[in-house]
Length: 362
Image 1 (cartoon, rainbow, N blue to C red):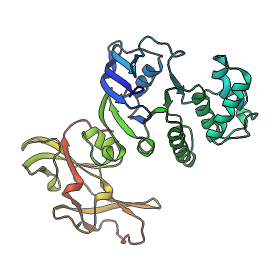
Image 2: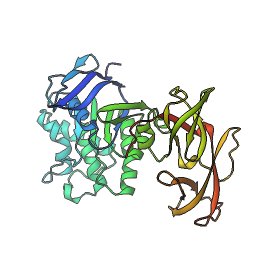
Image 3: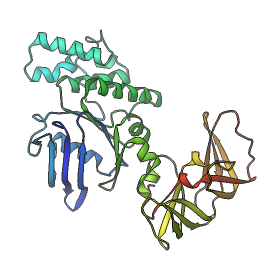
């Protein structure tokens, strides 16, 4: 498409340190795309390269048919919302939203019409004369979005803009951001270390570690079908079982672990003798055998319980590592389980993935 954002062999070095490694990626025009990863993984460096504050050490970044290399931030068709929003505290809402338009020389009457349209877009009509210090945190977020969108960028860049908000407001603003992006059709590139933010808002997510993109996909693919040990351990909660593969057949593998032999899917086509990790989500564990024809059983001891309202997390003793977690919905049917009691828990073979042993997320 004419406004796809393409990264072609992009590398960024700072002296001997390589912040971004061999990035080949296309962000589709009109997509809400998130880079997800821990601090220091390279995601903010990518945002700075898109915005023009730094250029790649190697490779090229293109927006449609245009190369962005060498174009300063002031002439790129992009807008950036900083983590601290960078609103002008001595200006009104109207003046903040219209600032970029005034710099571009837009006449006052046209500028006022544009500001009014932006206020309608962010559901703040009548707030034009308010001072910034009179706004709530969520309202400030929306003003920052309106100011960025007022100049009609082709790509809007967002650097963890919700990180300073409390949980409920952050959840509300996720929905607001997604709705605004869908109404405008502008490409959003979002940077976050918050998994739930990325999964909830994005059309696609790129999970990063140590300057590399580990996996790109829609949220369900990233969560349900992780391709690497890092993705499996970083995105959501996962129980991890370390061992060596002893048998491979029909797209499945059997791995020898401290709990005995466990079977799971083998998407990376590992061979007998390979060291590997088996991952299974806490919510996929069951106290009763699943309906699946092939399943695993873990015999263990209850060491704790955490009540979280809608969820109940049961911790089970693990002879070689952190406790295994079983998560159940608080649906009124959670059985009473006493600490130190012996239990068997089960999971379907299809709910487990066996991946090459590699660095897992802390």
